[in-house]
Image 1 (tube, rainbow, N blue to C red):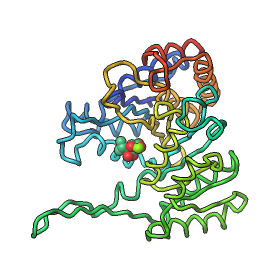
Image 2 (image 1 turned 180 degrees about the horizontal axis):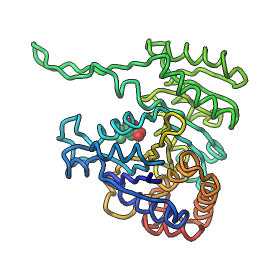
Image 3 (image 1 turned 90 degrees about the vertical axis):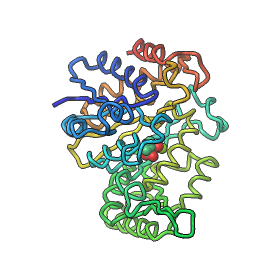
Image 4 (image 1 turned 120 degrees about the vertical axis):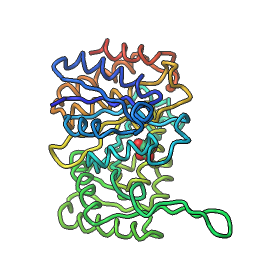
Length: 350
Ligand code: IPM
Ligand code: MG
């Protein structure tokens, strides 16, 4: 069984995952590492963004680390063959329904946020985003021509009790190991799926997690509270679409997308999928200046959650913080280091 499968993907994906490979080879030379084309680069080679073989390889690994997918180059490709469709198929195929997206303000970077230092200092939020359901996967979905001209587009938001409950459990369990508070976000004021979400979370809380503080918040209010007073949050539990939006917003509290990792987990014992939350950044792809820290920290999460090496995760985390303390910065966080030099800076601390 492969320990770590790398799916570099597109844009800056290959550049940042190359640094993960260097770090992994230094930290744990005993790990077996494998690699497959994914996303647009897989489409170019195989005519599909995720081959059956790559999905099988992912299922047969202990952890999968994805770089990034997509780019303007594939804008004209039919939707079911788009790089992003490959990512959704990978998440669904691996059954990774809970996406953990930490938004953590590193002390040396408290001034890199566009928000005031006193608002973001010490910030430590964990967003738990449902990842294999909701409007990303609901059917029907289509665009149709209307007889009188124009078109009509339909997407479907759908959730079941079981889907809400299993991701809710992860959020409550995580909160117990943190500050014991879950804020569950939906739009129960306008959506039936939001109503069910609130009902299921409330019920689960009463049955099994009454010791955890639970708060319900409408997703639009949560977006506002995130910039007004982000430190009120501990664990944010939310659906696929709101989680996508709120996690991008939260990243900005911490100095940017270049720093935020994520872990997608399924049933216990199944492999996890680890991805930086940033995209393929076509504007800087190939320039060698992308920040590899989000990818490196995603590997840190893989060590902790899938590879059973919390000891190495602690070492790696410490090395990243040290490198930042010593002033290592790529352009996105106000510095001049290249992607490789940032990798060097982390390796130097290991
Ligand atoms: C993310 C990304 C993806 C998503 C895209 C690339 C499909 O934005 O992981 O947040 O929307 O889930
Ligand atoms: Mg996103």
